[in-house]
Amino acid sequence: MDPLSISAAVTGVLGLVIDISKILKDCIDGIQSAHEDAQNLLKEVAILCHALEKLVQFLRSEDLKGKRFDKTSVLLLAADTCQLRLKKLYENLGTLRGASSLGSSRIGELVTRLKWPLKKDEYHQTVAELHRFAQTFQFSLVISNCELLSETSSSVLSKLEEKSGDITTLIAGLENLSIAVPLDLARQSAEISEIRTLVSDLARSLATAKEIHNMSIGINELQRRSDYTELQQIMAWISPLEPHKRHHEIRLKRLEGTCGWFLQKPEFQHWRDRLRTKDGQGNDSSILACSGIPGAGKSIICSLVIDELSTRFAPPEDCVCVTHIYYDYRDE
Image 1 (cartoon, rainbow, N blue to C red):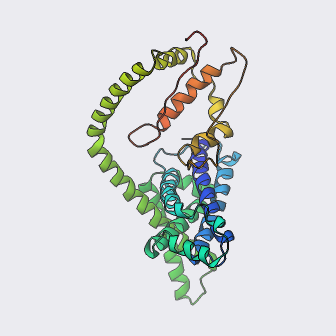
Image 2 (cartoon, rainbow, N blue to C red; image 1 turned 60 degrees about the vertical axis):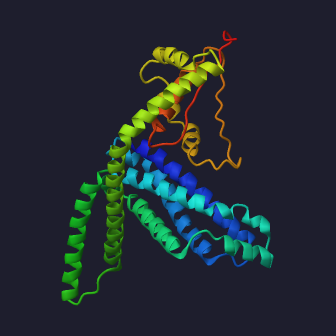
Image 3 (cartoon, helix red, strand yellow; image 1 turned 30 degrees about the horizontal axis):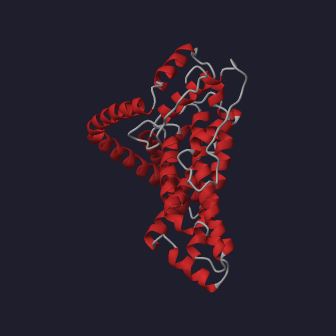
């Protein structure tokens, strides 16, 4: 994978972080003496947001041009896992949406305190996870570190353990000589320790996910075939039009590599990545409109977008439904 593809994944995470930050900020600004956990959590979210913004810029810079990332790279795995954790947090904070409208009355404060959705253990775990993710993304802002995190979990763990061993030996040598350990060295040792913990957790999560996937893939395949047959029957009942055939015809006209530039457009990538995070509250437009004269290539671009969405949101890993229809003046 190229850095731009990783950047798109990170941008999706950033959008979710911004939404969570807004929920917490509205709660704190709108209600005097807001829950202390909300204030501390907002600080961690702000740190993570800053690290993600820097990472998006870094991945799009000329410094990483031509670099390649493994499909199971630690950086991509960290971005995907971070997004899953943030989705859960976003759902848990649902009771706080609109908290600012309660005003600053004592009743409003009491209601908000009662509605704080995170238990102590869950809160501390969330803060610790966000802190590790922020440190990992911050760590990757150096080219050599980013190249390290472009590799698989096992490879990264091996190299981090080696690096940690070297630092430990160096610190022990300095202490034996009664020389104060430099703050940068101590900080680097703590940083590597945190990242090793995160990478180990990511590796375990990936192994568990693969086991579950292998166990369920047979059942999912049967269910998918059944659902597809039923969907075909429903579509035929709704309308005699056959959009899948029309899509196939247009796709055959599309030359390899055609319109690839459209998928790299920030407007498209932002819209696509927001499909998973849209809260249904009408806060963000879910419409992406492209206009042009007849023959400009709108249908060709649409066919490419349909294929992109169908691939990216493929079941059973994803729950986003992709459906399409081409409007043609010849169809009545």
